[in-house]
Every structure is written in C-alpha cells, then in structure tokens.
Image (cartoon, rainbow over the protein chains, first blue to last red):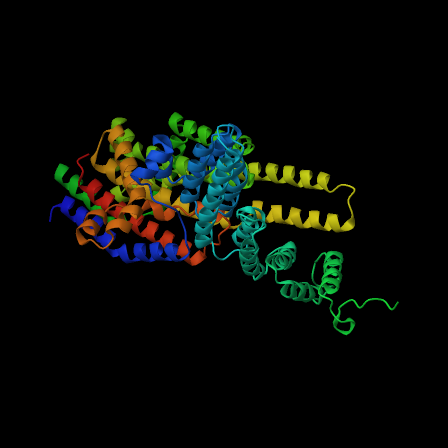
Amino acid sequence: MPMKLLVAILLFGIGFTLLPLESSIRAERLRMKYGGAHVTFQLREAIGQNLAIALLAGMRGVVADLLWIQSHGYWEKHEWLRQYRNIEVVATLQPQSVMFWDLGQWHMAWNIGYGAFSDPNNRTKAEGIKREREWHQKALVFLNRGIENIPNRYELYFTMAWLYFEKLSKDCDDPPCREAYCKSAEYLQKACSFPDAPQFVPRLYARALEKCGDLGAAYEEWKHLWFLDHSKTDQAWSIIEREIRRLEDQLQIPDAQRVFPQPAQ
Amino acid sequence: MTETITAESSRRRERVGFSLQRVSVVAANTLTEAVRQKVIILFLLIGLVFIVLAVVLAQFTFGEQMKFIKDTSLGVISVITTLIAIVGTAQLLPSEVENRTIYTILAKPVRRFEFLLGKFCGGLLLVLLGMALMCVLFAAVLWVKEQGMIRELSQTYLGESPAAHLEAQQQIQQVQTEVWDVELVKALVAVLTQAALIASVTLLVSTFSTSLVFNVVVPLMVFIVGMLRGGAADMWGTHRLFMAVVAVIPDFGLFNIADEINLGKVVPWAHIGQIVAYGLGRTLVIVVAAHLLFARREI
C-alpha cells in the first residue's frame, strides 16, 4: 500500500474515531452553556474584519472587551445607536457574562433612555417620553434574554426587578404603575431564593410588595426577616424594626399580635 | 571487503534499538537552536508587551478590569503559543536539510523516528518555555493589580467602623480569590494541548514540504478551519459527507475554555481530561503519520 494512502487512512481514521469524543465535549459545553454565537457573516459585518479574525483565533473575550470599551466611547459621545449595536454584539459574543447584560440594560434604560428623552430634536415633550419608553422596553427585552442565558444567578433577576421598580413603574399614564411594582416583587422573590443574594435584596422585596399594594405580604416579609437568627444573619436590623413598627401602625395590628407592642400609655 | 563492511554496518544499524536518550539529545539541541531564532524571540516579546499592556488597557474598561486583564493575557498567551508552535516547528526539518546537518545526524546510529520525535519534543519544549515566560509575567501582572486593588480598598475603609473593616476584609479576600483562580491552570493546560496538536500538524507538513512559507501557511489555515469547525458542525453536524470531509481537521475550538473560566465558571477536570485526551490522541497519530512520510523521504 502506498505510504501516502496509509497516512491518509490514519488521519481520517483518527478523525472518525474521535468524532464521538468531539460530540461528547461539544454536547457537554452546550449543557454547561459555554461559548457564544459563532462567527457568521452578520457578526462579521457588525464587528469588522479585524475583530472577526481575532474571533477566529479564539480571542472571543478580548473582542468582547474591546467592543465594550468602544461602546463606552460611544456613550461619552452620545452616539446611542452605535452604543446599542455594540452592547448587543458584546452580549451575543459572551452571553454568559452577567456584567454585559447588567450594564447593557442600564445603558439602555437609564443613559440612552434619558438621552432620547432630553434630545433637543424632539418636537414635543411627549415625543421624548415616547422615545424614552421605547428604550425601557428595549432594556426589558435585552434583560429577558440575559435571564434566559444566566438563569442560575441572582444578579439579573435583581436587575430586572430594579428596572421595573425604578423605570417601568413610571411608564404608564398614571404613575406610579402598581403592576410594575408587582412584577418587580416577582423578580425580587426569585433573586431572594439564591443563597448568595445580598442582604438588601429581601428588604427591597418587602418594599416592592408594599408598593404593589400588598401591605400584608410586605409586613409578613419584614417579620420573616426579623425572626431570622440575628447572630448568624447579617442584616440591617434597625431598618427592619423601623419598617415593622411603621406597618404595624399602618395596618393597625392588635397589640397582642405585634412584634413590637406599643408601650403602655 | 566493501560488501562485508556494508552488511556489517547494516546489521549494526538493525540492532540499534529505540533510545530515549538519543531523543532527548536531539530535543535539547533543537531547543538550543530554536531559542536563538529571532522570529521566536520577536513573538515572545510581542506577547510579553501585550500582557503588560493589558493592565494599561484595562483602565479604559467600564466594569470588571480583572476580566479584561485575564481575557487579554490568556488570549495573547494562546495566540503567541500557537504561533511559536507553528513557526518553531515549521523550520525544524527544512533548516536541517538546508544546512545539511541532517545527513550527518542520520549517518550516525540514530533512527529516523528518534530524530523526528526529538525534533518534535524540542519544539514542544520551546513552546513550554515561551508559555512559562508569559505565565510568569501574567502572574506578575495579576499580583501588581491585586496589590493595587487591596491598597485602594484599604484606603477606602481607613478610619471606618470595625464592621466596615470586616467588609473590607471580605472584599480583599474576594479579590485574592478572583486573582489567584486555580481554574486558570485549566485554561493553560488546554492552550498547551492545542499547541502540541498544531505543532504536530506543522511537523507533518514539513515532512513532505521543503518550503518554509508552505510549512507555516498550511498549519495556520488548518488552525483557522479548525476554529470554524464547531460552527460548521452545529449547522451540518448530521450530514455524513460533511463529517467525512472535516474528520481530518481537528476541532481547535474545543480548546478554547479561557472565556468560560474568566466568566467565573467552574470547568470540571473531567472536561479538561476529555480535551487533553482528544488533543493528545490526535497529536500522537499525526506524529506517527509524520514518521511514516519521513521514513520514506529521500535524504
């Protein structure tokens, strides 16, 4: 058998033999949600030739970081649409980065949104408000994609809750919009379920419940926090006590059922 | 008389068994020659400069500076290591042929396989050395950044309450954990395996080609196609014809796990083991294929 043929058989043979291992590695990566979008024509168009080559060399993180720096530059120059495009590309390249989703939605809802609202080219104030709301919606859609990609960490649930709490709660004809606070509470409840959620998350959950109109649930949440072991849990106990006292007065809880009974007159 | 001598020398040659010592001698000589190559030194310098620059560039980021430093440094280590593996290996055989030193070596009781393996190991040692240098600088850069961050945190909490100091201590511990992440070793293991594989591809090409440019360009193309294989497999993964065509090209995208590690994901050792097994399995077979071609080559 000619040697070249033997070599070809060897090379193809090992290729075929290792195909199941290759598939297994790829499947495991898919399961563990590794990687991001592949280099497609659309992606190449968006990031340019040089960065596409860097992507091909396996420098996905570097490309994402460079685009992120560039996006920061666009922000400073108030070039919102370019910034938005970069944020989208960066999140596509590294969908497992919490920071890109978190700061990306913040740029859209807070910075670009306000930029659109206060744009001197707006003919009326209503146009500014409409444009700002559109950016809030873009942030919402963007963050939803983030949660789909990273459902196993508290950060993006909290970010989504904060978006509803701070921005979407004002996007209705008669603000504050109760529904937005209720949605915020939903996301905060999810964020609270993660053991590494910071101490302010459950406190904000109680506040969101109150703003949603469910004072009873808010009171129960504050009480739940208060009855946690003070020696083992790091919390702002004075704030919790203050809120419980306030709600007990507001809800006119009978003295016998109060956590902090009123002092005898 | 001449016939007797030829037969005698032929028998002696037949008796010469495989010797790891001879392989190591060839490898050591290869390394000595390779480290003197200006192009390798240039690549290394570029890599080292980029790793230092990562700290400066990180100042421009809005967000996690440590992520940027790690992304850039690991990316540079990966690219430079790959380039060193390709360029370093590409000239191993052609330079021996051009300088005619190969005739002197092969005239001695050195098997062609030993010679080839020695050359390959020498190339790998060069890659390892280059990578070690870049890793040392990477560690130094991380240490400098860590110290800076700790200093900044200490100053922020200076004169604050004991509770704030406790919080500062926790943050400092978090910084240290983030900086000295053991997971980084896994990324480096993957990069090294990738370098070994691409070096073996280059060695294979250099066994039948005498052109240095060809020896460099073909493995580079294989590398790029290998990087694209993952995407192509996702699109046409089940197509038999596609699988038959691409089976010969290694999937280099599989070695890219640095991104995941930098994003704080824990990559299981079992997964690294699979990647290493895949890389080394292919490397081994490619080296054997290179030997088969080299054994028949007229020198």
